[in-house]
Length: 323
Image 1 (cartoon, rainbow, N blue to C red):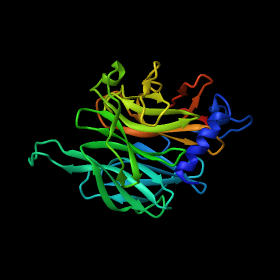
Image 2 (image 1 turned 90 degrees about the horizontal axis):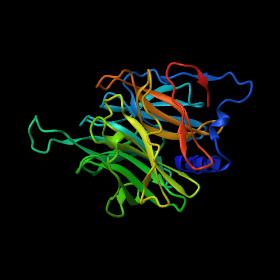
Image 3 (image 1 turned 90 degrees about the vertical axis):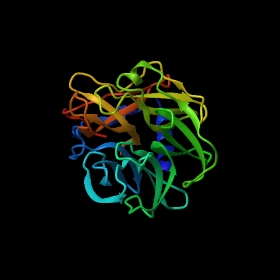
Image 4 (image 1 turned 45 degrees about the vertical axis):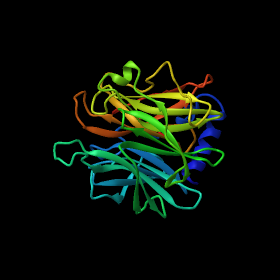
């Protein structure tokens, strides 16, 4: 099953009724998980795809390459060979997409250059794409697509049209969407979808980033993270539209994932369907409430209620019903 076929499965599951997370704990089932879900201190910005009975997990870790884990249950993960390296460094936020041509496309964020040519100038980031023959890679033939930009996410709609969402850094942290001819070629100019204009998105810097598109029925849910990722108030919200390029309306109850006692900075997530159904969100949390990059990967359920609102239940260090 390609990741976009999996997206169709996500929509079918969601349409079966409200509270898809109810399948998480079947009667008499004692299987559990506990966050952190992966023993990899510092890992962040996860992306997970499902293919032929196996979940593939990629993440930010170290900045020189992308790590790769596999699992059949979303709970027990095995580290595999790193799937992509880039000598420029600063690799962030991988996104992997399986296309109808049978190839797999890894969208990366990487250091591109220092605009003024001096060591004190900020490093410009760019979004690009590398190609592989399988979800485990290796991915090669990289092509830089757009800069300054970060946090790309590819989404294929029911009609076969492909879109790339990313953060346009020319004017702050604005999330844009852009149609594509194919996985390596844009079809048009970027359309601004959201910007950091709400209080929770501006707690520690003015940030909207980490886009993830989830389609349920005829509604497009553009999920994203707000506030600065190195702070404890990093959080997840969403906006909805009836078109993949909007206009999007932010949910009045944002953020749906936020800090609480002993749990800090939940953000930059992806969504998959669990082995027994239901949506599951993989994301990262911060280890403490300081301003730093001490992060770890986490797993928790996500569901839509009968009014179309998204909900999640976050956990840390406790045994929870497994997917």
